[in-house]
Length: 487
Image (cartoon, rainbow, N blue to C red; front, side, top):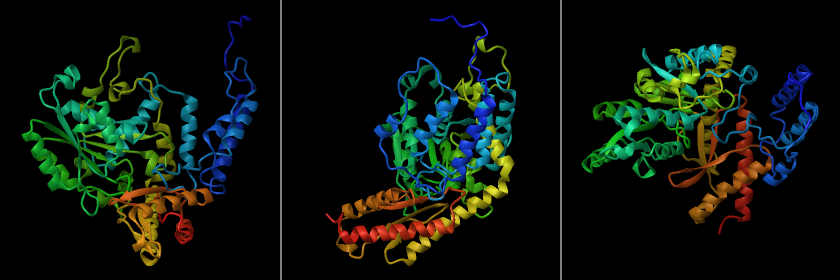
């Protein structure tokens, strides 16, 4: 093995040229995002086989490596920013956020401590202040940037457990006299149950509270569940409310739940990962009335604020409770600062996420973002109107925000079994995906399958909604006439 010189490094001789090419690749991807099929029809084996996969002992020229990246990625990229990508609540990222992300990666700050990233630390405080103001939190609030809604919910429930179960940090749940119980709507996100598993609460101690005919948590049933658990020696400690549920976009009765939690001495966490952006809108912000009363709130800027992945936020009414949960000391980190972010979060090493969020909001302003939120909500209502006026469709739920759900009705649908109707919806969406026209996902609404459009996309227009509706209608008529799913 040849000995390298003492001044050997990993710097690239033509870095600026390579950065220019990377910028061109990203620009081409964004400019052409609506011109290709939304989802590629391929296999894992085919994609893996397109990469050189042997461990490289010697290096290659960056242009060669970029060629390999283009050859492997470009044909199969899922075009999440496509105007008819309306599947998961993973939004079309705004290009300004991409610029901020590139700068953040290039600067490579380490905002676990103030010294590890002074600007990144200060900027995180600025954007969190914006969100605390937006959500109505007063003095003493806390918050942190995380990867997304799953971790944001975990963070909220973790501080709830610390605040409502004295001694849990030292003794663990094994040392507690009473099992603790957590309550969430049957429309709640799967991250709630996963958080309970990670925190030692256990899936069996998560109570699924039934929802009403508008898919909102039933407060009367919640009250009965809490009272019964108390009688059985349990310790109810936290309610998780939805502000934009994943299937229908429903918003739970936040003020009533806040009243209940105050009465019961319980923590209220609101999962507003998707719906929190409604606070930008003068038209829709009243639907989140009472959210400022929550003890903690989850919101995902990488959903309806149009920021690139990953970017989530947990807000806390009390910074003191947050820091009491996460504060950690380590001599090797040096002298502490009041602004060290390691005391606000599970993570020590963490990427700076604030710059892309700040860059997005600074570039566009909240008025422009609000206009997109309003348009997205109008597009959801348009889809439901089309469904209502068609003999082949029916709305499956009302649209509180920008998620629209509807069911296709074959002409002889009364003769179909429910299983066959459910399969028909899956087949319609599979055919739509194969066509390249759009990418949607099914939902289960009231025990029945439906197609679901989550319109959190700054490029989606009325023409896109009408094209999707027409295409799915044609597909549904073709499949139902052929009798493919009428088993």
